[in-house]
Length: 385
Image (cartoon, rainbow, N blue to C red; front, side):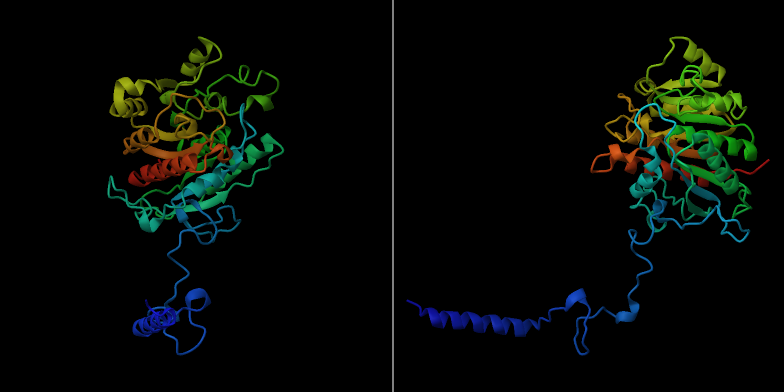
């Protein structure tokens, strides 16, 4: 039998020699030596430590880690830009679940993994953040949450100020273009007012599960003018204000309507054709793309994406979810297929993060949609008339 004391001593001796042989030096707290003479320091010395770059989770959160610009500053010295992200934290025009006022922050959170230095598309080999356009995040428009009328006037002015500045790359386009992060769909009305002022009437490609051309007398009940301005009537109002062309089109529609014939007649009057959600089963993605492009032709186009165009399996965090929608991949492929159109403005709206799951399915999808919209703008600069 082995002597236990001798065995213990042998083990300690072996362990000690192993430590000496490997010359292990345990780092102090923080991993950087607090005393001279220790070898546990960063390769090349402490002066090469870089805390300015390399972390997409540092600093204030912006969309895709883009630079922040205070686009509302009352000064001519503001940094110039070509494409601006604008948050519209408004959700008091909804007819179902609220929460979309937190959509801009949610979409930015969903975009944290995107960055200008790692934005190269595996499909196209392009990086819309490293091309000719300077893309910035203007933060959120300062909107009151106590009065819809005032809030929408504030949003009108925010769009007017941002689009009214001289673009950074005037050789490509003199007028900056805006991608709005919503916010309920009422906010698109302010965007269309701004695009009309800068670009004239536009065709709208409207991705949604609902038509959103309801007469305010129907959706709003005729209670008041105030009640009639909401996320289901904004396209009707845009038509009445002469902001949009009769070459507009819905895509992904599947929600029930209020009046069997009246709502569809009014939709036609507002200048829209309809691609229903299940049409993709018959037409395929290529057929949808062809239909949308043929409808808008060579006109200037505004793209509005209500995240509820996606099936709730892919985007549960929205106020008026409707089953039977498109997949995230289908929507992104359709958006990519719209390359070449004269897109002068866009948005992704109705994102209500409180209803999302722990995997952040909806905000991740919305962030990628916004990325696609930016890419479409960069791919095809649009000159003012």
